[in-house]
Amino acid sequence: MKLSEELQWRGFWNQTTFTDDKLIDSENFTLYLGTDPSADSLHVGHLAVYMMVRHFLERGHKVFLLVGGGTGMIGDMRDTEERNLLPYEEIEHNKQALKSQVSRIFAGRDFTLVDNADWLAELELLPFLRDIGKNFNMADLVSREFFKARINNGKGLSFAEFTYTLLQGYDFWHLFREYGVTLQLGGSDQWGNFFFGVSLIRKLESGEVYVLTAPLVINKSTGRKFGKSEGGAVWLDENKTSVYKFYQFWLNVDDESAIDYMKMYTMLDRDTIEAIAENHAVNPGARSVQKVLAREVTDIVHGGARRESVERVNEVLFGGGDFKKLSDDDLGALAEEIPCVDAGIDVIGALVESGAVGSNGEAKRLLKSGAISLNGEKACRK
Ligand SMILES: N[C@@H](Cc1ccc(O)cc1)C(=O)O
Image (cartoon, rainbow, N blue to C red; front, side):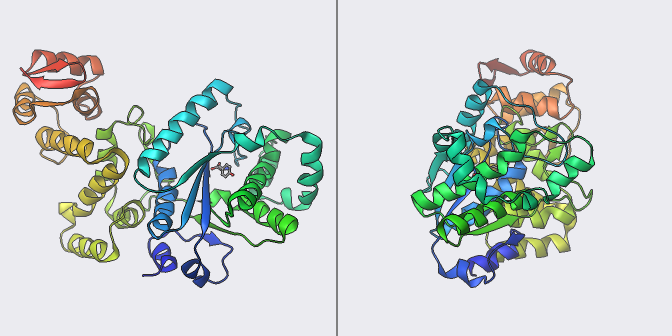
């Protein structure tokens, strides 16, 4: 299957400036994806776009991953309201967290990490306005949907946030000149920013560059944005969403969307996914799609060893199925099955998130009084 076909089949092909799909199949691109350090972790919404990048990587395209240390000091305009400025220390902390997370997701693969603070922080106002600002037409800038939404909802927006688009356009231009980057990938909300980068490069370099956005992932049964659980966003950092909860999140996705997510969030090939879908159609009750989905995505984000330990906990606690209240016998069974596991996150997380116990403290007390002892990060059979 060609890359363009694969991206379309997986549901990654939303909006693009490619007028001919064949270009993407015949040329070797150097591309980039940018993420602002607005939090200290990515969530599963981001992960979809990173998976799109993975497909380019697997086929030998060159990848730059950008952490927005510079743009993160301003914050991208959204349709709701002004963002709060983050303190410098927080941006720094988030940046380090994102860098190590991204390196983990793409471990063993060849990509280059860049930080736009390295060039944006050095810009001077007057040259910037003359060389860059002059190439942006206000009529275009104010016709953006996000801008109109902010005017229409009465909240308005600061000049700083309004200027964000110019900074992102500058990035594209910088990466084009320095490294020959000619393609930018991102989520569908980035279309406006992308457009201005493309036209800036046309004006300054007479160069042609391309953009491709992935659609916003929607949960078909609720019609809502995908990636939120009851407690908020599903994060890739296990300190914000435990591995156990992450695994459960995928296990619990609805039948209707499960195949769609499998196409986007796993690297399984088309034949494999179609075979799983056929089985699922015959016997949906077995939730075989969800099980494979949970396994594959957890492997990508947290690694196979962590996933296996979660699977064992899930199997012993809940027979691999629904959550239930735990008795001392259950705890005993858990101890039998798992002589030593990473308790700090898996077991205690499992107990609390299952609703079996009310709090971390209670989980710890139960574990201590039961057949399991806690030893630092490990829970071991006594
Ligand atoms: N604006 C992007 C992040 C980004 C930042 C700088 C870039 O050059 C590209 C992308 C977002 O909010 O998701």
